[in-house]
Length: 118
Image (cartoon, rainbow, N blue to C red):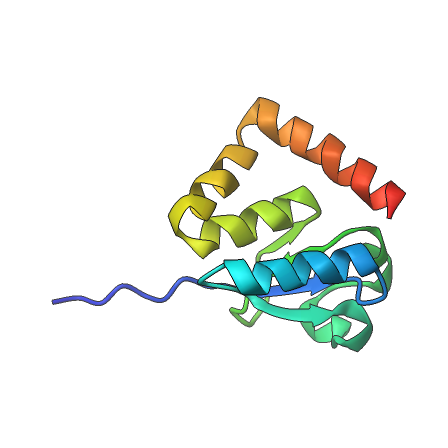
């Protein structure tokens, strides 16, 4: 009997000084059964994660936990979709839907509108 490798839940890097961002992370931690490790970019080792402060100031980031040079990286609405896909259950469906061409474009518009308004 073979065992499946555990899904890489990664690291979600968010703006710890943004009240809206903190509330979203709190909701995620309460609602999602499977969650990435979560860290405010102000407290993160950005070099180790392969991120810049500019990237983190512009959008939420998701980085795979798997070390080395082959890390996956998603930003903004793609990071949100990755977290939801990894969460399983109905959240996975929402994350998959977010990546469909028309929905993905709308997700990006909504994400950028919220980011500008926070």
